[in-house]
Image 1: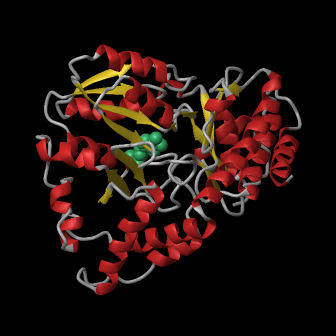
Image 2: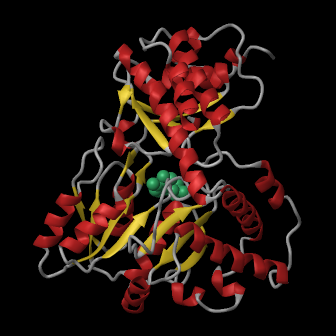
Image 3: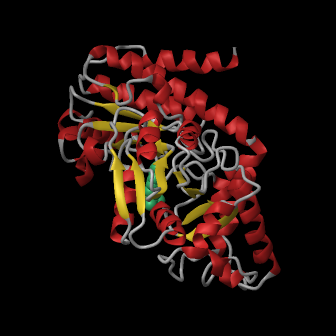
Length: 414
Ligand SMILES: *Cc1c(COP(=O)(O)O)cnc(C)c1O
């Protein structure tokens, strides 16, 4: 079967404009902001028989992963935890370990994800206040300071924010928000979701005095989905001692026990740990700072292409201020066309899966990931496919986006 248009997935707007012979054969390329591409060596490290849960190798691997995560989170003071969970599980772990029923938290809105974290808290009996934000802007540290100053009785027990909002493509200034909390003299715990940013850009648990840092395996850390990671500061551990939302599975105290069995509240995720330690070895071989620089360079290439395409008037950056655009994902608004037609065309005919708009941007945007295991040909290939789709679908766009991306990448070396 050479004609992919016969595939049911090709139904919809993409079908009417698709070429007779699709160019999707070859490796399908996933360009969504999670899960991201997993290196072959990481996949291979998991392709092995299970081991005895008491085997020395497993105990060592667990210890190494917990230590390596301190390196990733840039902390010496915090304790790290590994959960068999996705990012949502990491969110729940952060809240349940530190808070009590009726405690108030302040959620800083900058898109979909911090609000989602707050929604989980509300279901747990937490009093969730949202500091309203704009999907196209980063959180304003001055607004955080003003709100915390007004909280003279210190009823707010924690501030929740995402570093990168994967829906809006916004990057928040985590040290500036820390400084705002300090300026207000407010003692709330500082909880930061680094799920779409740890491994992709600076994230400094100790230097920024983050009390609970949360991330997950399947985005910047180049692993399959299935693991959530936390770093808990001494202040968070002190709050833990008084928290009444604690439950057995997430509980830090139980996981602080020396037996491996307790660290996972049951069977260790053996294969995931073997994959994780391999992925983190790759990250450390590159160097964390080098990985951040790579993400910055790839993001600039994507932004260069989108800036050129935007001249056609049919699409634009969701995040207006270039300084507030994430180095790991770019969200592109599509006022002039149906983004699902573009995504469908790229998938069916070109073999590239672009990210969809989510939350308030559902049906109004598409997203390009440049996160985790990504390099120049992966990003150029994605941009080339997107530009091909824009052209094939007759969507007005400035031409030369791919050239601008190549220029930006070349600039990285000069
Ligand atoms: C992906 C993501 C989440 C949710 O993670 P899941 O693994 O899908 O539960 C939370 N926060 C951010 C910033 C994310 O990008």
